[in-house]
Length: 524
Image (cartoon, rainbow, N blue to C red; front, side, top):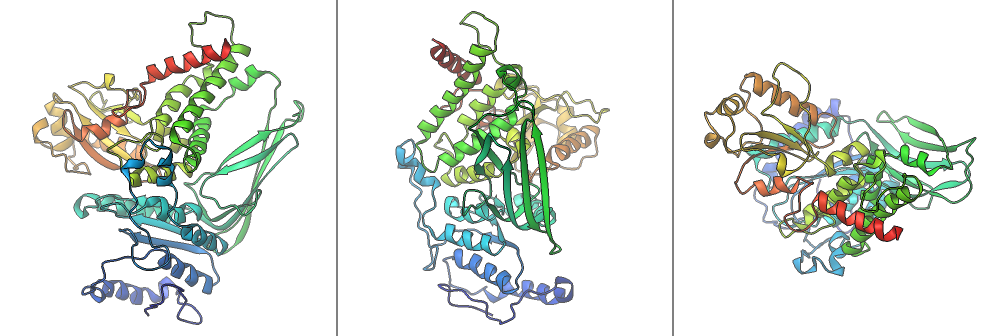
């Protein structure tokens, strides 16, 4: 059935058209086979997007059940229809106060659509295959606000990228999920939840609504401490989520948490969770990019880092020379993560990073859990040339800096979205043979996105390591082979986060000096 009215989409059958897959399998497969043929001679070269989501939502609404839409889309929706968008990708806005416009949706249609979806328990997962600008900041709002996931495969090539896409699709269909969820966070007196970051929709200040919630999404909550807390009874938090299981059962899940309170600042610094802090700072900064100039956000982050460390120095550290930078044990790695956040392509524009990629990364971080944001801002960097093929343990990671690379080395870098295998120009031929089944560095093709199954100990070990890193990560990481001194090396080098950025952004050492200077100013 074809509904031609895209202005006001309706369900053409009175009792809806959702069917039981087992009973209707042959009809569904038959239809899927026919669709490419039906539209083979179409002259239509413009796409719509919002009415498609609307149609899916209306179908679920008519069937009176929550559910999830999988949408596969590849171009800017420019046809005359609700949600029509124009190309507004303007490089002249970079590094100006108007840069924030690039992260804002172009029209209010998508937020209104997402609100409707949440009201009817309809979650939207979007697979994008763009070859040019598609306005992720607008389209991505629907999956973000409905608890769905956004996947993006730029310049998708069937022979190179199909495995990554199929892995993502398979894991998305299989992942544990709850629908039509509502969450409330309650606290004992003295503090309260004031802000929520994640794939959530809020009609008021207390009810966190989610069309769906899956095992890869996290909600970060900010609490405000505005009254006395008792050291005896501590601080109590309850998080309750009411949701519908995939089998249609309504359930309530409750987490209760009791936290110790202390009037001693030293105790507070001892039990600080740096990785949770970074998750929070990243989300609050990425939320702020919609409203504030990026330069202001970066300054606030540097300032907050200096304030936290100056407070420790003033109240907890033993007296020492002003020229010394003193960090609490639990926050030793805060500056390196903070510097990496400041250099992320969301907060610092780069001429070679498309606007859509920045909007995409912003959106991913907004729903990330702590382990995922930790890997995203400080990638795992492993030397492969020193592998012990008899051991099943992962090799010890090294720091993300160019100084760790060597011409005779092979390194694996992973950040949760991408994996890079870097080959030094003098990589040992026996290793190259063992991993790629070719005689030397010169023979390695950088076109492959999957390592060949060679059967050698090195090949087995490396593939096992890649499998372990990929496990439990929400996105299938695309492998890129990078040869030393060849062009694609630039993208890889951006992820060596302790070094100075190619287009601005301090090295870790320079950032430490900058924070130290700020601390000294605050204390004087």
